[in-house]
Length: 497
Image (cartoon, rainbow, N blue to C red):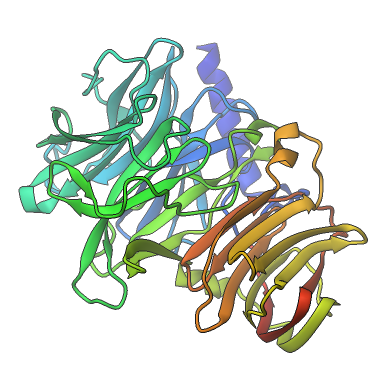
């Protein structure tokens, strides 16, 4: 009883904080990325669209600002930009924590949970976790559009008696009129596929892995169909998962029982090549013409508990629209922020061109902006953008023409000493070829988060950094020879809070 009294008190406080603007003005608080009002958050869960609302559930600790007491937090949005916080959706109970999973709209009432005319069940499928003992798959349902939830009285619905068996991702597979679940055996680096007529009875149909990145345990799989860019009516299937602490994806085909990878099984393809992007999944039940949309957790398990933010910890990425394209005989997933993010753009504060040798400070400074940048690649030259600048402090996003790599380096940016693992993971890079001799960058910087979309979303990098308020300068740089910046547009971003 004492636990639930405490939980009720925390939820009242959470609601009050969410409606109190000063709680979204703290140092390092992102202003256009989703964060909970208070306490710890990790994986996005149960992304689903229903009756005009995008539902975001997430791993949440109602009692503190570090990992623990996993339950499902909840928020909704009409546009994927502005979010309304709702009460805790599915709380831990006794010894069972509510680990990651997914949510579906059971429009045909295959579960039988709807008993009155007009009721449409929303069903959450999640891992019930008993620390150190077992993981099994459970369900809960809502008959009031996600506002209140009831745990199924015959849980678990899938139990193999395993200690590590988690993160179910479920969707309706229309060609065979059945539900499909992908779920991981983390230490075996395998994704298992199950099918069900009713979300209660599950049958194993196939398996995938190990493949690609097997250096970390596998978590948070999500399987979804993606349109091929510029080829109307064509699509591929993407299997995306998280080998801790990063992510990878595979592009291929799915026949309702098993997934086939159409790229080489040894090469690693990542949705994000930065240090701080994990556990991304896609929305279920989107309208037919809607491109797939994913959201990921912006943090890294190597230092996640210790980042210097309070009273909240962790953020979600911007929602990303997904397509695929065959490039150099390989299937590549392309990502761009959803168009509706543009509603937050203010008028340009800097617009022009520049020829740069060395470092050229710009006339605008800030910690909450959107930049479009295009430059012509000069041989044996490193060029790009420095930001979060003050004296000898700065972060750097650059392109190394000699090595043909895009990189992000936060070695000299902001606070570093909160966890030694953070400083050891300050530079990230990945291969990138110019398009017609040019590199195009779309950079969105939000106080303690930067997302970089290169060459129309072919490559994405996300990183956290923790600069102080006066470390806000911006500059262009070119080391080696002169670089022509053909386009620079900077627009401040409005807050969603």
